[in-house]
Image 1 (cartoon, rainbow, N blue to C red):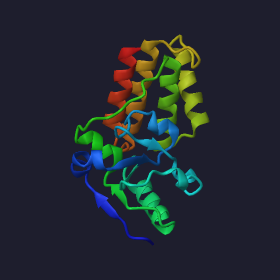
Image 2: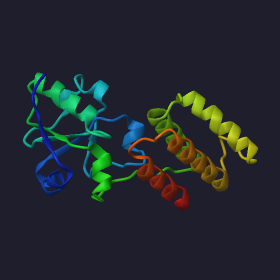
Image 3: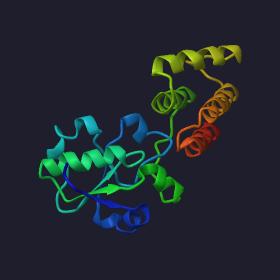
Image 4: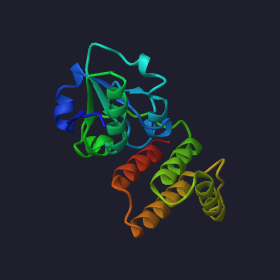
Length: 190
């Protein structure tokens, strides 16, 4: 295991101009409810070794993920490849959001796109696969007179209520409140 330095969100924010943030989450997370550190590049963890040559030099790399776990693995991988210096964002985007630091967001362009982001997030944090989540949400939307391909705002709001209730009963992920707030903010805009 290669040693690496962790940096807390307040220090990372204060030093952001001298760092290059690299987000190692999946694309749906990069566009998802937690947003991203301003100026971040996206290189998902599974692609990191193959794309290491794309990483900029001259500034320390700030590796970012949802909670700090995957970015820690990214720091180890890059250290083993001799790429650096690297810093792991302790607590990831969950801590960044909890500290109310600036976040870049990609707002969904439609209700269906928002619903797909909800599906991807639920599949990541909950017990359902993406296909199972689509099926459950599709059935729920149908009962509300809507559909997965053309959800109504009211039906999508009820799906978010269902997600909140379901995940709260199982203890929920650490970003439950942050993510649902972001989804509801996007829904209000659409």
